[in-house]
Image (cartoon, rainbow, N blue to C red; front, side, top):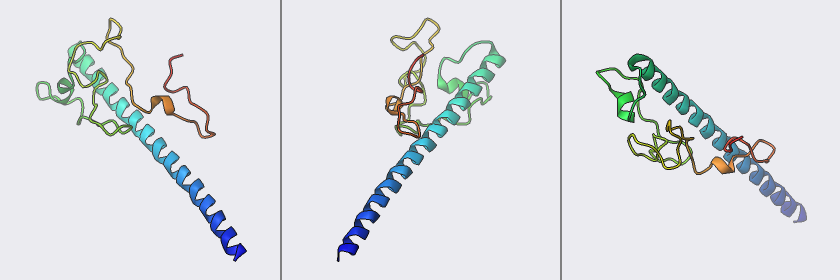
Amino acid sequence: MLTLLLAMAVMAIFAGVIASSIAFDIKRDREEELIHRGVQYSRAIRAYYKKFGRYPTKIEDLENTSNLRFLRKRYKDPMNCKNSATSNGGRSGGRRPGSTAAGAVAPRTRTAARTLTRDGRRSRAGRWP
């Protein structure tokens, strides 16, 4: 009877460790996907600038301008599962409050402050130098 109880306790601990490991891996996969999607937007903006000599004013310019497509589709943010394809809060064009004169603003996600490294420490990924 005691060995059965001990075995159940060990299995519960093992299941807890595996569940946290799976959750950690899922979060890492989402972060990798976020980086991939950011690179796609960066390439699209770079190609648009190279073609027209100016930056796009809205996301629609990247999707279809004079029958040229620089971006395949609008990507959803995998970190918070909302359709926040722009880094300016979903508004087309214009500046975000607190942005620089050039309009450079870091994209924000709800989980940027909670990013952890493999050993459980906080990452510097979401902070400015």
